[in-house]
Length: 185
Image 1 (tube, one colour):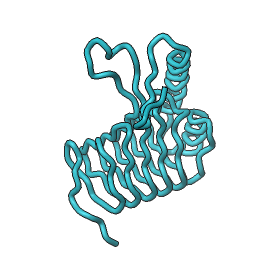
Image 2 (cartoon, helix red, strand yellow):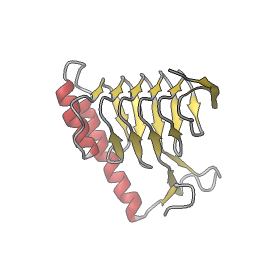
Image 3 (cartoon, one colour):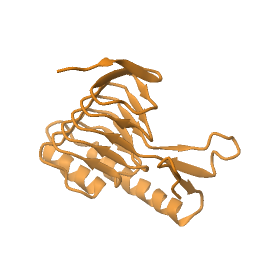
Image 4 (cartoon, helix red, strand yellow):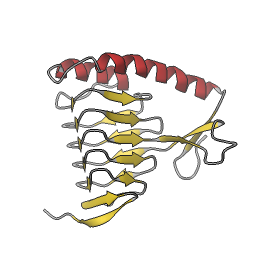
């Protein structure tokens, strides 16, 4: 059920939560196969990633395993995208990655979560989209939370936790990430 801030709420023990669970099981099987591949198996990595997302990725897409996801079918990837090793994409809320994006090692893109109130934490899952616009660099170990858009040409510094939108042409860093400076060509 959608609400005004693009967040979906998926209650436990519903047809939607059953479908989510089945998709997680499918993703676990596919990523287990993908994670047996090496740097030199780029074509097979692309083929398995395409199967995972349900859409063929461009020949310019490059991912270094291991890679982890809790779904896969909500990931959309542009051309000339590089994903370094040990990244986690929880895509239940939708994850869009534009052209020419570079994602460093150990980056987490997390579109889902749980209720904050203790009595509600196991009652439902929340899901909000992440949009990474064109020519963004997300440095090593950064975490981006659902509901965030990272603007074109921006850089997310290593180890940052991004909880709010990042304006285009900026460098952000810290926890929570904040504007460090504008980026000019």
